[in-house]
Length: 192
Ligand SMILES: [Zn+2]
Image (tube, rainbow, N blue to C red; front, side):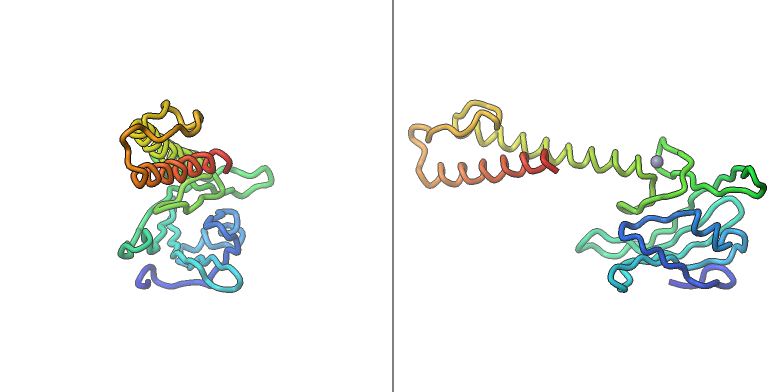
């Protein structure tokens, strides 16, 4: 990384394990007034686990970082987050991020990097939930397909049946094991 802005001030370490950025820290350090870029790093056991470059501008911050899904190539992300300010009771102003997720736009102090982009906690919880739901749905659909082949009553809560007449024992054992594995997967996802 490099080549942004005209200079750079001291780096800021965010010790938070989950990748979040807190605009209150940036404001407190005076980083938002100067329009100089800085590096924000996350670490765990004193080892840097991630970093982003932050470039404050008058009404937004540009964030740049590398992102990849495991096994894929690194992607370079350059993402702007709009800022808002509110007046403080005792004078001065307070900075806020505007959640960049589609349809959100909430004014927040903390954004999370749960995937490719930063978003507020609520947006990430929603995304996480829907992801989990689709995983569960997929497993449940697979279970029902297997149950159909096994000629068992549909619905994984209905337990296991017998080997259908004419089905080879090897096929039966394979389907049985597959069914068992999927059901355990579904049940586990309910328990998380
Ligand atoms: Zn949001």
